[in-house]
Image 1 (tube, rainbow, N blue to C red):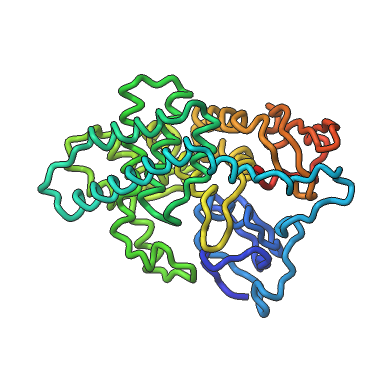
Image 2 (tube, rainbow, N blue to C red):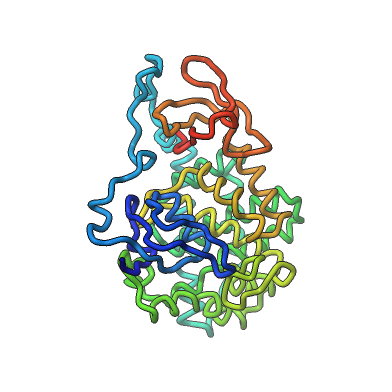
Length: 377
């Protein structure tokens, strides 16, 4: 048995000791074999180290069936998903996507320049209005919520880039603000909260921020300082206080398990709570060195099981219901190798919708607990 950082974990590794949250809730039993989803669950709860079984490591532990790329089931009709372009390919081939990609990259570069100016040249004034207008213009290029999330999930230009992550969080938060019927002024402030929420990570050396192996205690301590560092970078800017609070408080959680101040429900700024949800969703659906990106339904499942104790109900419930309904009528891949179309989202369990299989039959996933959606195709 040995201690292992989250960055070292891989699907197939076996957990040696039960894992508990800071509040004493057990979230993983001893003997659990890790999957990509379970590794993300540890990240979701802010777990930094776990005990794993040795000898052998990941290479000698059999990988769970659900983590393998499923083979086509023998009873799937001849209408194979292989004869059709994947959903991602269809999205990326659209002229509108290509135009969006150009504007997206311009905005990422603008964020990079503004962060550098704030940190290294604080005496120079910055044009916050310009970056906000550019971000709002980018958001307006999406005709529907479906368009937005389709493009977002396929717009991974800089893996683990702080700048692209900040842009994604800003766009997700702005969409949440629209669902919540925020005023135009509130939408602008919320967008800026997202754009600047992770500026504190710029102080962390890239070799630490993107380190695939084990963190030292000093490195962990440095990473957990980024909310306070971000607040310090922003505190003297002539900007709305909610933007500064979002940088400081976006890792706080309603049950008091967050950082840096271990605040609880009612003590966390509303805009920071929204940014926290957008931040975690984007992180889970992006690729990491230790796992592939989660399917949106897998991310929704984590929020559905654990979100109410970590986030404000009025924000997490709005987000979950809206994001799940975005994927109605999408084509999905199941963990048994079959593909299907999402017919209707089930309000009792958002990740277990009614689906239509390729043979035309309609099934309710509520009655099939062993079935899971693992990919949008």
